[in-house]
Image (cartoon, rainbow over all chains, first blue to last red; front, side, top):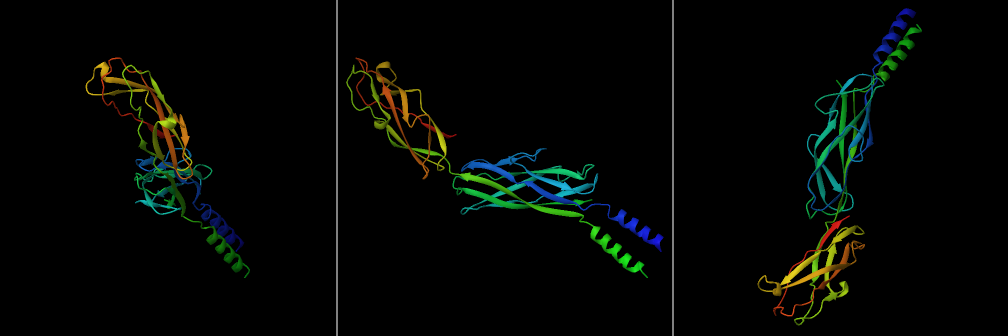
Length: 140
Length: 150
């Protein structure tokens, strides 16, 4: 019986050895300050954290690969100090959504996201605009 | 049997250890939209009437052209004036032209929009001396003042 318990404990340790995957926000996607009439602008995902791209840390089991799901359509930023909305679309990431991320030997990887902000009409109400978007990571 | 509670414990431990296969987080996309900068003329630069042979005349900004600049409250902008322009009447001969240069503005160089997002810019300049054979007539020309956010 003790032997059986030991086997079960070892099995349990083995089965739970794969850590769950988690994603944590480091910084938001920031299109900075623009002026009415400005053209559309794209923030590239980049390969390091910058003042404009969104940055995340993905953590989980060492050396494991995972898929990334970004918003497929557009996300709406709303004027937090008044009326008006602006669209954000064409989300892209590094590692890219189509390929997969791979966690390093310590079980971590940084994920960077960029997107395109729509052009600002001359009549766009001034103010601070913000909108939420979701990012999903999953083990393959 | 003492083994049963142990197995229960292992089972729960295993269950608790079966961590998530996926996770999601929310982030924000943000941007600050500021008012566009625009400038419109309120008053032209007028050198009045003069006679042939009269010497050069300088008009100070306070008596010169006036412009209204509107934009983002408290934001700074630069002011760009022409170097020189040539007023003319009729044809293009020298006696039908009068040079205007030494443009000066107040404020000069750069300025800051008020809390209401408005700033007045006044522009003066110097009109060249008139030739003894200066053609009589009305002389005019357009000049451009450019304002740009800094």
